[in-house]
Image (tube, rainbow over all chains, first blue to last red; front, side):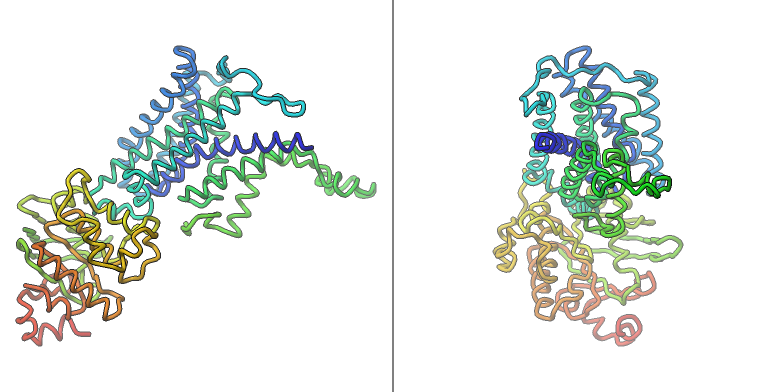
Length: 315
Length: 231
């Protein structure tokens, strides 16, 4: 039981940090541009595939740097030449634009790399168990993922709190017009934020690719969870996104590893009820409903705290 | 310095500005007066490009109508909007620092000057600006815009909702800005400050300028005051 607890906590935090790498960009982009970027998870996927391809040519370490830069440059171009042009027609066209972009990227990826998973392997340098806890070998690559996400998290925090550009970004989160009136080029800031946000998602892709499955549907699988994170944390709130990422990371990991059911907790159902619908509910395990847990959380949050855990906006 | 000719602006289908003509010379203090809803704020917003302008707006001889607002700001036109848009999560000092357009070229106003001038702000230099009182926020927004070294500042309703003592202080600050040679376009509803510090006043009604003259001329003109200003 203790073993399960420790391993699940580690995995949960890891999954949470990965979610945060993506959710941070998504939430900052939302605050500044007022647009929920449906294609955000696609940049995570692009990161994984670019990472796979560059790993094949030059090895994993160059890929870890080049793939996010490439994806970030693409992201910045999407903002500059796509979103900014669509912006004048209002928010709905912008939303549709990112929606379409998500499909386009998915199709392009499956044309280039196919629909089946690609063989993106953990680099040999990190392919060993970091430690053995009780009887479980914990892979070194997962520790590496955790370290990278924490480094980026700390770097992001310092950049945002301590640099002038970071201050401008913070100010533009709430008052983009005023930032413009003070003489700062808000358009360039938007492009930078979009680029950095998508690059962060791509970092998540490169480091998650070898650990999870690198496949053309990976954006579609992850995208919805990302929106849950951003809504639960509070749209536009970075601390909220951090909290919600960890929360959902942990909830999901723990739920998957638990086999408890109502039958387990209260004993088997009396035989005369065994043929009714109640018996189905009685025997469902927590692990079986794990995939819907984030959405249950989403619904609860929307009912009881629509602005999210740390959000300030009503929208 | 600023020349506005036949300026029109629309909110959806409503025709808010119906041909505004005005000008402000170097170092001049001009007030734009009028009742609520006559288009005073829209005039300054249109000049800054926040509302799409139709017409000619020239600043230092250059046509600025419809330019992105950061370019207008870099030409030397400062704008203090109506709602005291301070950045609530940043500290007072950080707010002031963001007013600086280019940290490599220090202007004639420095953050420390501002803090010296306003002990209230200095005492809270490192606290979040969101907790300041209305009057302090107003001072901070004006000071922040000054950090960018504007040659003309447009200040929209700086005294709205402030206590009389604070109104006096805001008036003193604006007078001080003028004394240092910065031109000012003051959008106001209260006549007291406007008449005290302005060289010239415009009165707006129904999206047009309906009176132009010196404060003394406005004081003497009961008809204009009754029809366009007094409630």
